[in-house]
Length: 376
Image 1 (tube, rainbow, N blue to C red):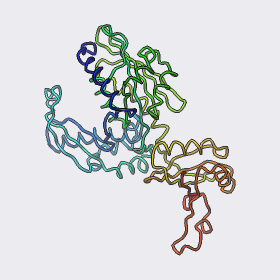
Image 2: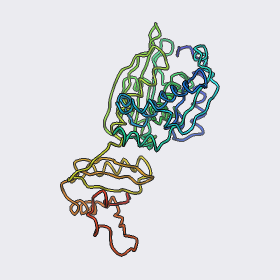
Image 3: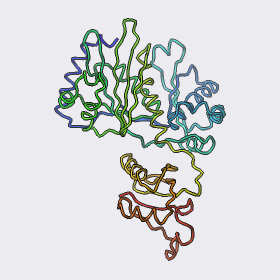
Image 4: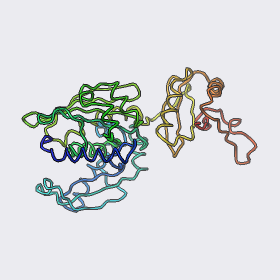
């Protein structure tokens, strides 16, 4: 399979050389993600066929937007799948050029886009499942193949296009933005195929530093004489790491096997979980969080404060996030500690006549009057 592409390998080396000459340090991104859209192969344009396709597409979108592969097992989700067509915002048919699907009678592709508002309401209000906003950590992917013909070699999309296509498809399925190293002279000097194969954490993290990625995924794979693809994957994220193995009969299976565990991990970490609040919870509205890096910095700061035991993300609107902070310190001690660190600037909210502060009417730190700050 992969070992047959010698000519492609030569072209890949030339492409890497050219890239080295014209690009500095921006990792190529796999593709733009469509978070609320799914595409399903269909046999006809009949309403019944469209209804079945809508169920399949909605299940895909709900897994993507909840960050959990177990979402479709929820009883309320199963009910929603029965009326999947009601969540569709628009749909369109396209010719199908997949020869295998055409042989099975799937003559067209149906693209369905679902209402973002309806999907968020379904997850957060009707089912109580997590909701993962579209501002997600970027993952840098390093791949190495060990083949009988070429030995261990770092691979690119020119060397193993089917593998990269599988990863690209899986990134769309789970809503994970992927990027890949340039494989220029700096990369080739910093990291050898043997180091990637051995999952040398220090070497991998050092080589990845130039890309400033939120997550680093490393994959090593080889193919047996029977055609089975054996792979080991490891990801690194903020001092944490996971390692897992996969076995694929087809290249198309490799991407989901690589990304599903990572997507479930990140979804559990970053998806918004319904929060009823409580007597010990302070409610904070934090403005100026207009990127994932700023969001992560703000959450890290709040989580490391001695006065907070837990930080829960409740809502995202533009560059503003709503947080529930479990703290026994009370408003006064908490605001005093924040003032000392100078990480967040307090924002004063006034009433319409601009003469009576809101905090004099409603207690601060509540859902009606959240503590309001701007991240510096």
